[in-house]
Length: 337
Image 1 (tube, one colour):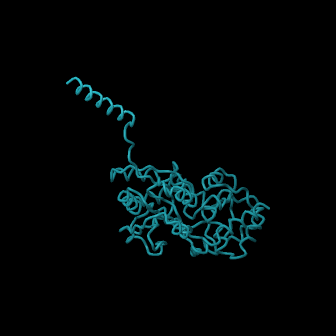
Image 2 (cartoon, rainbow, N blue to C red; image 1 turned 135 degrees about the vertical axis):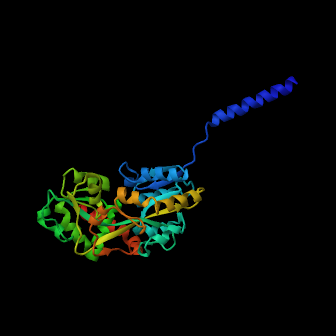
Image 3 (cartoon, helix red, strand yellow; image 1 turned 120 degrees about the vertical axis):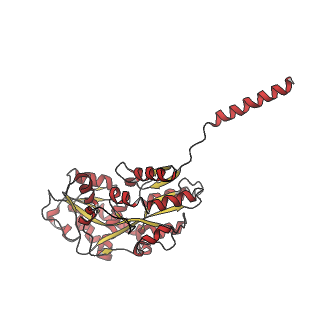
């Protein structure tokens, strides 16, 4: 009896030791990678995941993972050690690379029925559209009485040291401007970049830094989106900052969301995407300050004040994939001279 009692006590001690060593099991999260401004304190991320948890009980860990290209690189490195379940913010211009890398699993959300067909940029449903907009130069109306009306006018000497641009190697907005010049000027796009250099105050690494310098008054013009001034209307009741619709058109951008291939939380990931494309659309519109893709979502009247381009430009995704590195190399050479 004593021997049996000793063995029983020893077993209990060992079990308790193992439990203590292991500790409390880690909480299960749906891990969502997104670009930096989406995750930031002024972005829509935190409000979205809180509303999603309230509706579903599913907790989300939101991870800032850089721009779209950096997110793809991170996913490729983690291919055999997957960390994310959902990715928010891969834009239409990265579709070719996204499909080639085979990092996502298709999901045809029922909410797609409420999204206009022209926004369905991926017929394989690896990426689903969640917002869209157009790149534009924003200007400070208190500092600039006669703003430009075209990319060509931005080259005029009166705009010397007036532009804040963003590096296309590190920012999707910077890449948007580079593609915009290619859409307008074709093979002669480098001439625009060569001529615009005297008018550039600085080239930042990302949008947040660029827009911050702009609102601090460092320069009266910054590359951003047609919808950016809506933020100031919504949150500051100010019409000081305005966007410019250019004669030759403004480049469009459609941002996508997708489920990472191999996730063990597929059902939760689908619920998150459905939420983002439905109840979450208003938060995206108000905080991300982009147009929601869901046509059934009523928008505040302030959005009617945002002028839409008469011409939306898009480059073919295969053309971008084929030439992206060449364009970036040529851009760096021109801007470093």
